[in-house]
Image 1 (tube, one colour):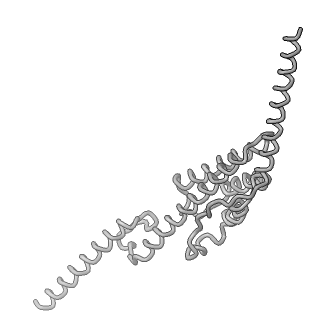
Image 2: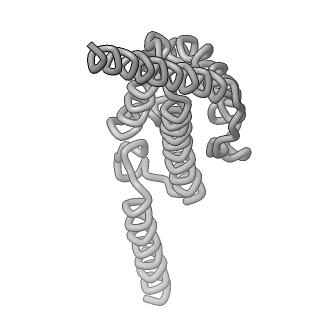
Length: 207
């Protein structure tokens, strides 16, 4: 009987200690969910390209909203998760400028949407770890930065190509499908033709 009594006492004590540890861990977890953390800055679109995207309301709305995630607690982040998902979906459905209608750009947007869905799913988890929320927030910021980086890259390329003045009407080409390398080749060919034309005129004049 004594052994049974000792066993019951030990079991009761062990259970109480285990429950107490669990309560402490839960309190600590809830406390960490309220602690504000500063995340990395979002890569911005270059200011000299602002006119190129000034009418893209969905992109601008998302850009402004994600600023809330830069310095926030997990609780604040989770409270904005569903709205973030909605804004990313609006970006997907938006009529973006033709320049950005490419598989590589759309892939980046879809990655951001998947990351926003993961964050939304976290709002339905009863016990969530603060570090997991911060990690997912970093994923979202990095994904949006990748979109802006692609926009900068495409607009830089466009700016470079526009700076190369070439009249392609005389050879019947679609200028929208000419890349920078092709433009250089066309310019070289055009200069050679002009030079040959001048030589022929000079030769004819001399004769």
